[in-house]
Length: 560
Image (cartoon, rainbow, N blue to C red; front, side):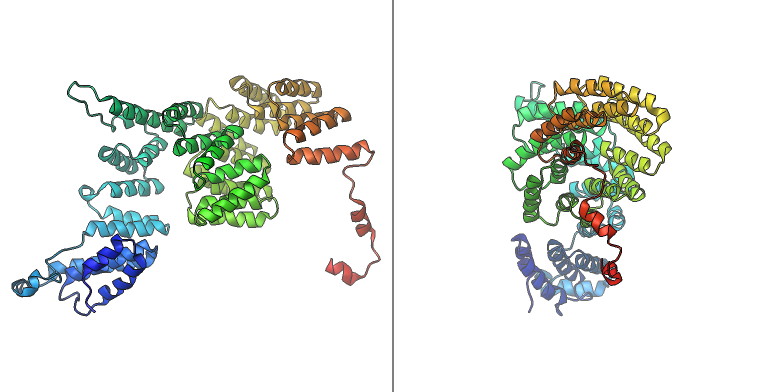
C-alpha cells in the first residue's frame, strides 16, 4: 500500500511511536519510491522511520536507517538532468511524491544520529557526527550537545565555546551555566553572557531586574561550589530559597553539597523535604541513601530503594541506592549493583564513589584507588580525596596518601575536612603524630564545630597515652553537641582505661540517641563480657567445641 508521509508525521506528533514504526516499514520498503526514481522522498521516508525508532529507544536501528536516509539525500545531485526535467514536466511534479516537493534537513539527521550514539555511550562517534555539521548551522540543541561531548572527551576549550554560544541564545540554560562554572569560568565572565534589556528610562523593569538578579545569584552559587567554596555556595542558595520557597531544584543542590561536606542532619532534612514536595524525584536520591546508611536507618533506606525501583528502575541513582542497601548483607551483590549504575551512566560520580568504598570494605584497596580516580577525573570532591587517602594508607603508600591529602587541601584551602585529611596521613605513622596534632588543631580553629577533627584528635591523644586530654576534649564537645559518635569515642577511651561504669553509661547514651549505632552495639556487648570477667576476644563456646572435635568422621569434616 502507498501511505502518504503526512500520516506518518501525524503518528509521530501524536506520540504513537509503535504504530509509526510499523507504518515506517511500509514507507521505507515502498516499491513506488526508489533511490533512482525519487531519492528525496525515499530519504524523507527513511528519516521519518528513523524518528520512530529513535523514540522507541532502538538506537542502533535508528542510526542505520538515518544513515540510509543521508545516502539517499546524497544521490540527489547525481540524478541526471534529463530525468529531473522529465519528472518536473510531468503531473508528478505537483504530487507529494515529487523529489522537489521537500527534502530532509541533513544537519538535523546528523544531530539525531549523534543523539543515538550518546544514548549508547558511543561519545566519540557522536562527536565525529556533530563536528560534520557546520558551526553556523548549529542550533541551540546542537551546541548544548556539542558542549557536553567536548567536555566528556576533555576538550575543555571548545566545550566552553559551545556553552557560551548556548547562553548567548538563551541565558536561562541552567545546564550551560553549571557546566561553565565546573569548567572554571569566573562568574563575571558568565555574567557578560546574560544580557539585560533596558526600558525607555534606561533601567530594566522591576520584574526583569529581579529575575536577572536571581540568575546572577544562581551563577555565583554554582561558581562557589565548583571552586569548593561550599559555605559561600550554600549561603547563596539559601538566599535564592527565600525568593523561591519549596524550590525542589535548589533544595536538591543544597542537600547534595551538605552531604559532601558532612552536614548529615541538614542534608537529610532537605532530602526529606524534597520527597514530601515531590515523592517521585530520583535525582541525587543515591546521596540520600548514603546518608541513611551513615545514620544507620535501614527502614527508611529500604523504603527509599523500594520507591526508586517503582519510579524508574533504569536510572543509575536507583542501582547506587540498591548497592548501599545490599552492602551489609551481600557485598558482592552491592558491588554488582554499583557497577550496573556505571554501565547505565559511566559519568555517574556517586556510582564510582560507592564502588570504591565497597572495594575498601572488601579489602581490595588497589581496585578502590581506580574507582576513586574515576570519580575524581569526573569531578573532584572531598569524598573522592578521602577515598584515595584511605586506599593508599591501606596499601601502606604514605607518600601517595599525603599527595592526595595535600591536593585536597590545595583545592579546598578553607576546609577543615581537608586539613583533617592531611592530619590522618601523618597520624598513620608514629613519627608524624606531632604534625597530625597541629593539622587537627588547625582544623578545629577553622571550624570549631567539626566533630571529625575532634574525634581524630581524641584518638591521637589516646595513641600517645594522653587519655585524660582525650576525655577532656570529648566532654567539652558533648556540652554543645549531643552526638552518638562522641559518646561512643568516650566509651572506648574509658573502656581502654578500665573505667567500665563510665564506659557503660556512654555506650547507653549513644544508643539512646541512635539505637541503630553498630559501633555502640558491638562496644556495649564487648564491655558487658569484660564486666562479667569473660574474655571478649575468646571464641564462642560452640565454636570451641566444633574446633575440638578432632575425632569426627573425615567425610563430615570435608562436607563442613
